[in-house]
Length: 414
Image (cartoon, rainbow, N blue to C red):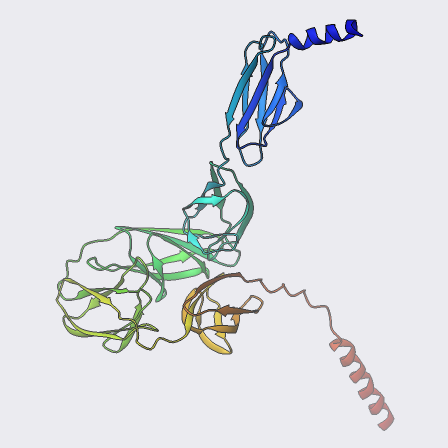
């Protein structure tokens, strides 16, 4: 019996150990591909001339891996302390499109305009949707990797039956009107334009208006690049109007002239010199009114800080976007505008809304707002199915039958 135990004891004395600990504890330890246990763990060393490869793994942390040179002497314990580094739960998503200016949403959240970079976005798979008027929707699932920049470039496809305008100016920030309808500010892409000859008017305070006729072709992007000229005429002036908060309806001399927007003042050119009344109104704020002197050849700024109403209404704000744009909006049966639209007259509670656009199926849904909530809804309208070519109807057989009956009656009389 002693002879049997003695060699075993001698074998144990010849063995050294690796003591592997980690912060946090409970990590899996491997030597090569062999699982050795969870930290803290004492691992018998092996006599390997090329060293020992130790790997420590734990979910949510980066893999620690190192080659330990040499082998512990008999009875020696070599401590290996591992500080695991947490895997970043966030990444970066950089979204661009061609053309730029598309509305991009991630997981159907709030929309942004391309190019746009989402920082500190949670890792994993996300649904990315891009919408641009006059173009087919672009929808894709994309994986955001931890601590890395994930890039997505969407080549937008022009929708059949419409063309687009890509308008850029020097300087930028000019207002664009297509056939008299406000269509955004430069630099911008305007889609869903019926093919044909269109009048494009570009205005910017302090610069001469630029007007031109362009031909919009089906499924084509027509590019307009314009260098605006500083005002040389002294007969008219301009107003540049801002409000805090934005979203105020602006009336000049009792005529509605537009709405202030976030980051973009309302610019009104062609104002006759003299005194003009400027009136602003926004829900849950007191009305603002002032008299402004417009001077020939000058730009007159008007900045209004609106005071909260002492008796605010229990309402929220609903932002409705559709692809394509131009759909009529009905909320609780009442017409309230055309998409894209921001509606601040929607009081708290449940509301039914419907969207109508010629050539597309009607869309109906419900929303529920809480007081002060700003809710954005993006909807892709479905085109109406093309009607199948008609087959010969019963008209010809009916006509033949009628003629036969007439012949029978005629023959009887004869």
